Image (tube, rainbow over all chains, first blue to last red; front, side):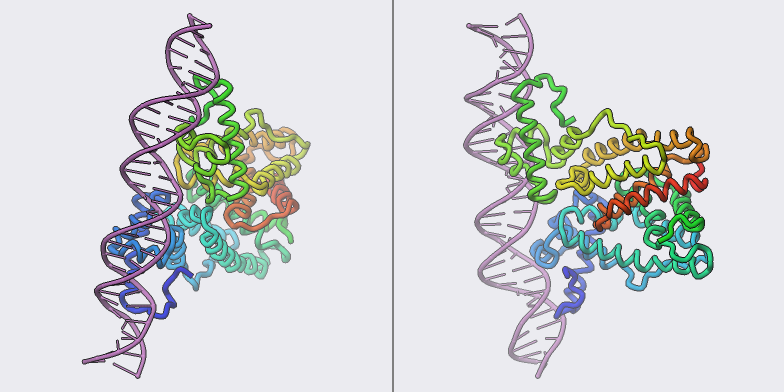
Length: 198
Length: 198
DNA sequence: CAGTTAATGCGACGGATGTTGCGTTAAGAT
DNA sequence: ATCTTAACGCAACATCCGTCGCATTAACTG
């Protein structure tokens, strides 16, 4: 993609330029926010020439997509706590953290996704992957006999996590760690009593 | 705000200009999408001069905020169907409609909210108002004895509606009317069995 | 070590975006 | 009917944004 990771010349300078630019993006994002992010600003701060940034990343959104890719952990799996409520609560803790940290790369890429199809697609893939990996917490709960077989994993995950995105990103209201955990528990309870059958 | 509704000279020409510009915004939004929306484009299509649009609305986001205000119904109340599940399903039907219609002013204002504080604040107020008005469906359910007293109205509404925003706006995946209704029923069921106590 | 060539640096350009000063129009007042 | 004055139209301007051609650097090759 826009990443230069597998380029034909991944040598020292190219890698150094990418690291410098990515660091500058994060710093500018922290100082000026998404709408204050400009290629000129990033280039100036990083010490890399404007033209180079334009050529390698095209747009501000391209920079953010690359930053998201840089931070994504390919080996990520949901933590295992021993209970569905605990697993979902840990998921929500991570999500809340990603959305409230400053600067939040996730929120910035969400903003970017409304402007360029590339960012939208990158974010979509990122989330599809995360939710697919997360489905195992429901599978494990079924195997433990904690919840009925045939429980709709996707709906469980949506009920648990969607309120965080909605309230923190769209409604722009704070959410305590306690409330985030409560949504996780609500979803687990609903699954337990058999509401979320396939 | 940016609206000219209560200006000192709300006469024929000013009102006509506003109507023309708003119509042009909607048309441009439908044709080019949010990221293709420009003041010059809107001005050209509406037949109003560039400078006039800049002076009255300042930015593209200002145009969208005004369009949202124009479409907002001050007398809105949630429909009354006789059951909590029915009321929530009707809410979700309206939300799904607002998010999937083309062009979706709601989605456009969400996009704008990531760029200017004015748009973010306008959207926040809009939603706070809507969720406050919607709380009555939970109150009614308690009065009918359908769900326990002390049920957390906000959590009921979030569980029912957040998955729609999350899946349609952020995950950018389609959602059938049936699934939207199912989330409404899930939230109602969870309330009924007492999971969502205050 | 010398040669090849991507990647970067550099300056200049064209177009888009937003602003300003001033003249013109028309809504509302007397 | 006349006057006043917001609101609008107009043109010129400054700035920002993205691109291009060409020179330079430095990573890889043999």
